[in-house]
Length: 268
Image 1 (cartoon, rainbow, N blue to C red):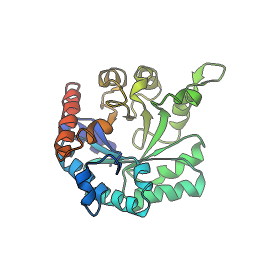
Image 2 (cartoon, rainbow, N blue to C red):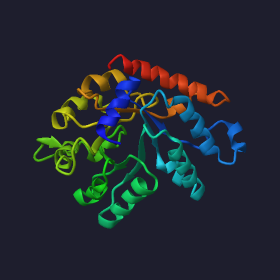
Image 3 (cartoon, rainbow, N blue to C red):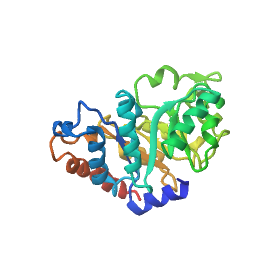
C-alpha cells in the first residue's frame, strides 16, 4: 500500500485506528472453541465488525507462532480475509542481518502479503535494508516503546549527553528509507517525547501503541504527534478485541472501536 492510499483511507473513514489482533486462545469466548479454527473464527468476526471503522490491523505474531503450524494457518487465513484496502502490519519485531533479514522480508511481503513489518534496529542498517527492497511495502522501525524497560537502552544519553539513543536511531535511519516506506513505533505513554521526535521526522508516519488498556492518551498523542497528513496509526488491542467474553464479543468490539474512531474524527 502506498502512502497516498493510506492517507486516503484515513480521510475517508475519519479514522487513524489500528486494531491489534493479539488473539489468545485462552481469552477468546468459550463458545468459539468448538470451531475447527477458533482463532480465525474470532478474528473473522472482529474484522466483520470493525473493518469500516479502522484503517489497519496488526496481528502480533507471537500469539500465532505459539500455536505452531495451526497458528500460522490461522494467521494466513486472517490476512487473506482482511479487505485489501486496509493496511496490514506484521508485528514481528524481526532484526537479523543480511540473508536472514531478506528471508524474513520474503516471508512477510511475498508469501503472506503483509503491507508492513515491525523491525528492531539494534543490528543496524544491514538488518533493515533488505526489507526496503520491496515496492509499496513498509518497515516500521522500533524507536521509543511504551514499556518501562525502554529506559534501559532507548533513553540512554549518547554523544556526551547531546541526544538519546532513540533519537540517534531516528536520525540515522532516515538515511535508509523515506516517508514513503519507513514508519516508526512510538509508544503512547511517551506522548510528550513526540514533540521532539517530530523535529527529527516531521513527515513520517508513526505507529502508536498503548492507547486504551495501557493508559496512553489519544489527546496527547494527537497534540504532539499529528502532522499535515495525520501521520499517525494509533493502535488498540485488548481494549477492543476483548471488550466482551460473551457471544456479543464482536458487537462489543465494534462499540469500543467506534468510540475511538469518533474521538479521532474530531481531529480530522
